Length: 252
Image 1 (cartoon, rainbow, N blue to C red):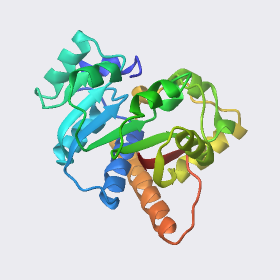
Image 2: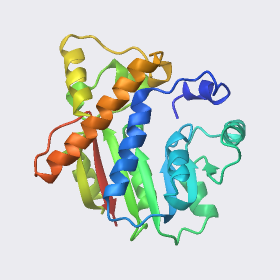
Image 3: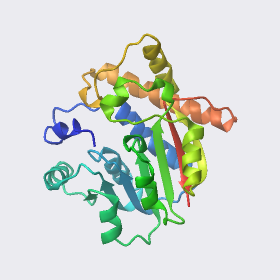
Image 4: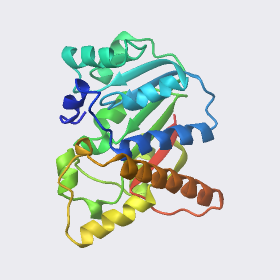
């Protein structure tokens, strides 16, 4: 959870969510509906859940029976605020995976989300080792793409690295994940980031500082929604194009 996200928890009325966050949530929902996973699944565990925006969106659409939001930034004060913000929903908030495995029955059909998390850890195996025994369950990993695009903006966000899709595949294969699907998304943002990098013009704000108006926000959401639909269409034609993020859907 980005420290800047703390500020939004107690000021929900005045907070304007960045269209990247909304679009990423929409990409996940669209993608999950295209998979062979039978929903509602028993449980969804969102690792690195932040302000729990994604997990509550999935709850609202009945993707599972049980929901867990896990983030190392969670403490009692933040958890209480999250519960208040979300009207004491059925989501369980935990501060780490160790707490999850120590206190809950894990013999349930589960989808683990690990979106934009691995790049925040100096050693990815800290997370992947926890998931070693999750045989038969599903995992959705998403990470920022292309180390050549690594910049001060990544440092601001707390990133250690970016990945190519082959690098993400290799990491997951080495840790005994079986990849069911893979690809990139947000090719329009990739073009913009390359342009920023070539002009040496770096972003100095996190996604928490969004001040775009409704028209700009709606336009970006529309472009990114169309972006993903185009990528999925091309994928059906066995054409893969690069994007600013890459993903792998896995099982064990």
